[in-house]
Image (cartoon, rainbow, N blue to C red; front, side, top):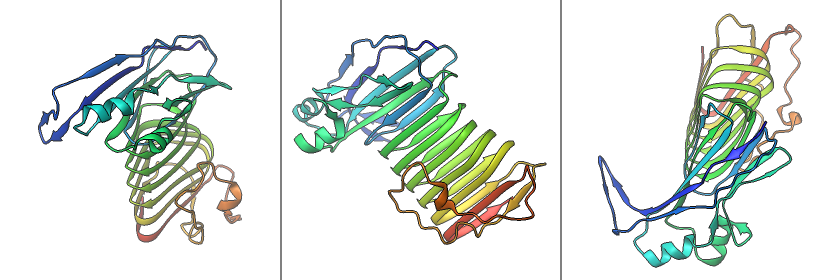
Length: 291
């Protein structure tokens, strides 16, 4: 599938947000159009690495991957703003059928460059990305900021330290692995299909899970350290529900995004039939509601 990158636009501004209005600390804007990245490649995955900022994904009906990044500066010093952004490069690169989106500066990860040369205060990178249907896998690693994904059909690997994750009207194909340290996970899927294991882990916060249809889903696990789980399962589907399977498992806050099946160590239930889905939900401190 041919892939084209449109212009990546950076909007640099300084603002304070108050309910219902915007006040600018300094009356200046800096707006840049980066050099257009335009090439024909084969790609079926997108991987994004970010430090601070919101990440948003929506579908695109044509064959283009559209990437916009808004760089927000909350400080009031124009010189500091200029120094922090003068070397930033958001040009994606493609390798092994994967589009890699990572801010760079002088051949370093942008956030690493800020830490080593200035500081990373008052800066956030907010991504708005539209994906065509041939992108079948999405991996996002973010430190601080929400992840929002809407109306896409693909497999998911998501990792976030602080913020909320909202996956709405998804068709998840193949896998869904989500790790969130501090925040809430809202996950709604029209379809989960051909999945060996769904694994969602929140250390501090809630999981709200809804699925309309399961097709060949072998196992689904939701685990919360401190918080609540509400799990609404599709009707007319055969389940074996055992919420004790995860009770003894301890996943560190920096757990890897892809889990080894040996960590799950689920019991073999003799009563299981071929097309049953094994469901496990566990909260260390909080409540679980399954319906």
